[in-house]
Length: 355
Ligand SMILES: Nc1nc2c(ncn2[C@@H]2O[C@H](COP(=O)(O)OP(=O)(O)O)[C@@H](O)[C@H]2O)c(=O)[nH]1
Ligand SMILES: [Mg+2]
Image 1 (cartoon, protein in one colour):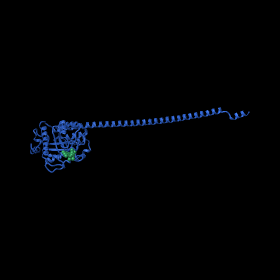
Image 2: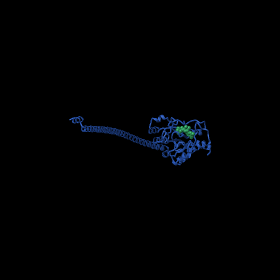
Image 3: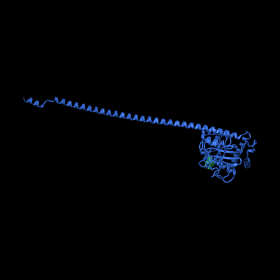
Image 4: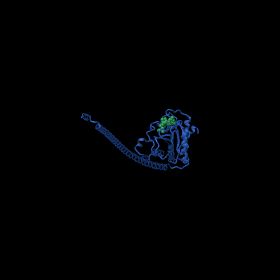
């Protein structure tokens, strides 16, 4: 198909024209997901720019600190039957964030509602409250957005694998991957990682941005190809398999609520374990400090004892020295006296001679 044919194909897609009829569906929601800053909003801008063929605008409020959005799930209508859905995105991937992603992929959270609403309630409550607003006539198509600039670790690869399989279970579609910033890292290596995970449809883009929105045929065609691929996949899924959107939505809700509940329990258990570990570490620290204080006290007492001993020895040596000096003095005295007794008495000798 050339560009015009692709445009025609996209513009004219409608569930009513599918072989089995609409079966209760009336639009495709292309639900973007992925970590914050990977180019979701910019990809929406690119889609609108290519599709509407008008002046570039930052429609999806890309490059804001929180993705620029104040809305939980923001819909951008592309055609009567195709809507793109952006979201705030999360900064990390953990079980709680997965709950949010599953709720979005399951189309269980309202579209176009301000985030303030979401802040007040836990996810389970938000899902329950949104129940009446959710249209089961939406066919959710998951598209994972990843920037080639961000390398994927082995652990992240494992996490993504399970995320993608759950996405497939929830929506019936294995996610398509859109790589953004395709020249900012190794495109081949990144594609390889996603292929390992099981992704077989990968599109790569250099998004149109405020700085660089010079139109190129390559980007335009790639984007139209992407939209055609989504439509063909949706057609396949509704033509080959009989569907019951109302029942499917109820099942998705059940699955996500169960997941969120179990993830909450696991998180609480982890928090409890962390609290206990912290307490244990605190107790051990106190014991170590007490032991250290006792050791220092023993050291001080030992030092004092040594000092006393040393002083006493000195005293003893001084006494011994004194005694030995006294002894010497006595001996000297005795010697002197002994010598005095041996000398002849001079006066007695004179007296004897005169006689
Ligand atoms: N050069 C380039 N910049 C991009 C591309 N995609 C996104 N960006 C930039 O990356 C930043 C985050 O993009 P944004 O669309 O807000 O990400 P989000 O948080 O996933 O919605 C912005 O500064 C965008 O201009 C791309 O393909 N090429
Ligand atoms: Mg964003």
